[in-house]
Image 1: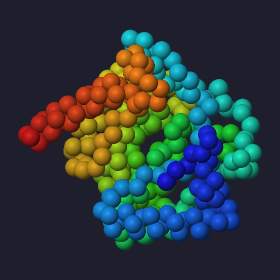
Image 2: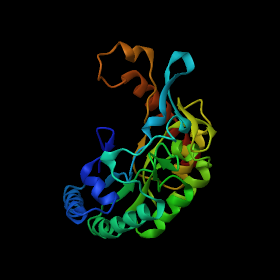
Image 3: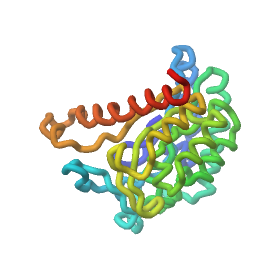
Length: 273
């Protein structure tokens, strides 16, 4: 379910996020999509719930070997005004009220149709973005989401990079979610965090604050069976030679080449496979 539209909030999703007239019609479309997914055997639907995404805090920075890193600093954007196209600024509890309404409408449909709804946490995760409060930018928020509608179809996309961005221990957070079977999919990436929620750099999987092997072992120990996505490839020089708009193929190969052996070693160590 998209949230973005020309760097703002998708107008249709905005009806749901802000509780505007027309939201029930939009939710009905999502319910039908879930029914269709169930018929087709598509197991997971990833979605987002932003009233504004804090992209204004991003900037490219040089990293290891001259590769391009993605750096986030909240100071770059914390004083920026709301965008008129997004609507009036929204406070925390009003946003949660609308999120709860959405969950209570769609999760029973997902459960009935054997579909998992996997929401991605706020990324970047500052508490405010363009005057609006963000509601999935802390571990307590993630717990609140899971507990709002207690269902195996109400899951998180567990991004261990975002977990570190929050200042949390990915192993603690991952075990909490996995032990409850509340991980819809995994985003397997690493960061160097300087100030929780406000100042960090996305880096290669093998040189950040997360121990990615421990993350992989956590998943194996908890018998996790869904997608592990080694996302956010870094900007390698060789990929810059490709035509504009081409996926960074060498960087993707690097991420996958790091992730796959982590899984193979964890399976051998923990299961003898």
